[in-house]
Length: 265
Image (tube, rainbow, N blue to C red; front, side, top):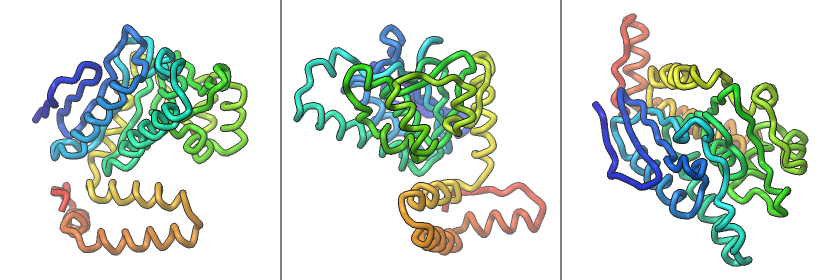
């Protein structure tokens, strides 16, 4: 079953066989982010969250050149102290909604991902990358800093030293380096990137949706605290999921050697 979202100017949404694709559709501007595009991305993810037919989301960019090339420099050039802080807060809120969607989100980085584009990908749970492209956070070259969470998410993913090198030099890194750093999960030629990403999504879709949501929550919340507190979070969620019909269905299906039929309950 395919679920459509009301038309947006710069973002499209399509869902088929429980796999949704959200596409930033501004290829003439290399899918650059401005306030309107960010608001439409937020609307698309809100739709994905509410869409009962959606189990996993792929986020990508339109065209062959860019995932999201970065922020709209024209907007940044005129911002004030108050406006800059407000823009950062709005962007951070949009990315937090992606990170806390309750469904796995895969960034399919099909082209340039710089600045806000890479920050957008960092808010996704898993990332795949075209072998022909580079990614980075070049903000310091414009005498600004990442404002959509890049200074916080990147070191949590690749470590402080690697993150500081990327941020303080502003230099892009190659797909090979991104894979070595653990910044991306898969690298594939551009022609194979969709198939590679869908294969990863398919492996997720075969599992219980509540388990996917709670496992993601445990990892995200646990990474922000001590090991002791993280173990308590895991324990609480393990107890909660033990009350669900999906847990009983999954275990019974295993014992009965059949495919489980999950309902998200």
